[in-house]
Length: 171
Image (tube, rainbow, N blue to C red; front, side, top):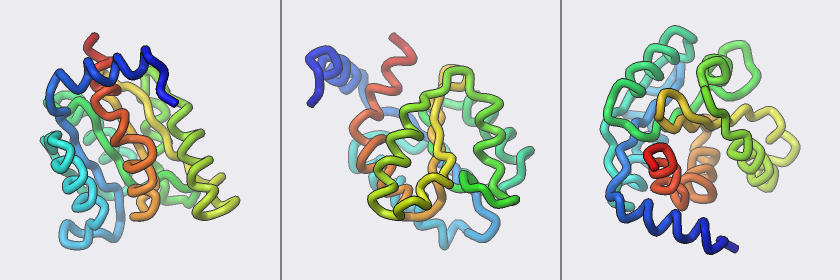
């Protein structure tokens, strides 16, 4: 299903070496010990030969989300993976901050994520505000905080395009 052009881009991107990622878990209840999403993502990232250059666990407070976004954009991270805070409850504010900050939204990420998520959770997928885009030459991806959602996003969307996403920003 991959076009010749996309295949060539992926090949060139892989030749650039490992991608530097930051993991940000947004949660009012998780601790570093109970953060299964960060543990899963770190294992997956390192298994592909990429690097985790930062890990943050923050509360779902707009000021904290914005501060961490700025910090990650100032770091060596090429890609920032947020998980949590994408729903519609009063406490879910991650999407609101990111939506204001993203300079180049990638609407296809959220659209495809919700389509894939529908197979797992049915119509409840419409309540996800998963999103992605570019902020200050850094790819930002934000998924729901459920372990199933993080795994779905990683396995079906992020892992196969990670190098390609990072490469597109520097070509």
